[in-house]
Image (cartoon, rainbow, N blue to C red; front, side, top):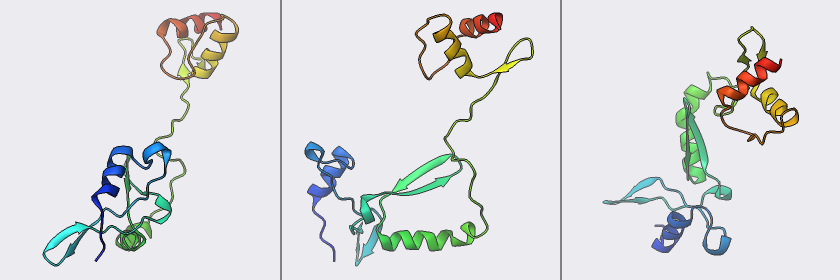
Length: 142
């Protein structure tokens, strides 16, 4: 039987993977295991204190699993992963989309940002939406 102190879980719950003063807190397996009449967390160490990722559709999950439960999960998923192929692009990354101008020319948001900074001297953020006025101004100049 594995003894789990509530203090360990309290630290992890409050501070994530970082403990008090930036000290690394060890992660423990969260899988519920039936022991006699009781159901409790497995409590074994998570290898390298790294959560196990799982992605279904566009939703990404992370689980704290010990090596035994990681192997069990891989075994359960084996029939599906054996027929699957790896994705070329990670889900969640953005592809630069071309903006279609009114005259048929296409350009990217980075083109507009560079022009606004270099030619107009505007302080434009690196990310986020561009205003319609900025895009219109860029189109008129080009």
